[in-house]
Length: 371
Image (cartoon, rainbow, N blue to C red; front, side, top):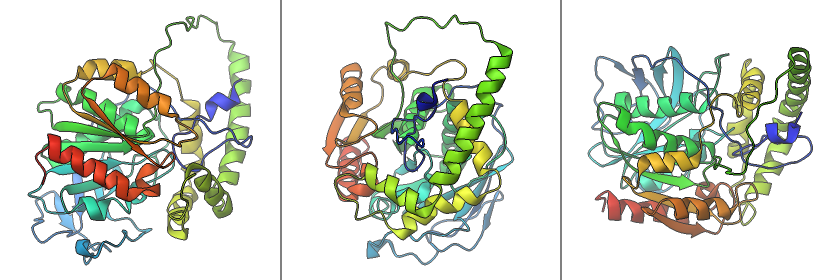
């Protein structure tokens, strides 16, 4: 059993007890069809008008001053809620609705709050949204199969049902892979609303032309024993890694250039969701489904896009988990791409937010008509 491969984590705090740090690769599994959306939105701008499917609720962002430049406040009760497939998805919205839309998607183990230094600045140019992926953050954590398709469809449905206008998607690590996956399949929808994609040290596997086919016949008893051992090891690791001191330690490992933004609020935004009764089981299901079903490769998603949409790589060049070689390969495969090297690690948007915000703004100015 390859425990080290099981723990290929694509964002913040979840590493094996051995200390191995590699990139999480999302699993691929069949998922049910999407359901009708129902939203509960806070009043985040004066021009936000509730509809029949929208109820206004109190939010700490109601009185947030974008011009202040302050980071977003952490709010453990959540911000706004969108009902998706009978589950509550936590999300937030900030900025002028008349401006182009930007959707930010966090990485594995994190939440929308991880963009706390990006949303205030980018909302000056964009109508900014960020949500918590199903199973993470303050979104529901149902005991079901998790897959790359689930999060892809969550992004596409959110754009269709909540944002409802052309959108740039930007994501870190697992969120980067989700953004790319959604961009590649947006044309399957009645209207393709994704107009550009930003990858912040995106996770994902590339095809290995030399890999042999896996023709090994599985033994049911062996598989059961493997599952039991995996559950034991993963459960123990989950308990260990959700401790505040351990979270801070791992965060500092992936903020190798400047760890000044590894603060108490960031640690708490990761620790608090782990207290959910389903959190450990969801963690186990996500990790053990890694690689299950038909694999989804970055190469194939880029080929499907066929240079039809602009791609920005805002890449932390000191990432200890996803090396710059991954960005090199994406550039080689996709000519309609631009790369901005960021002096940061795995989470450049939070370690060096000014540089990432500037890169996204320049990308938008060139390709999306933003000022």
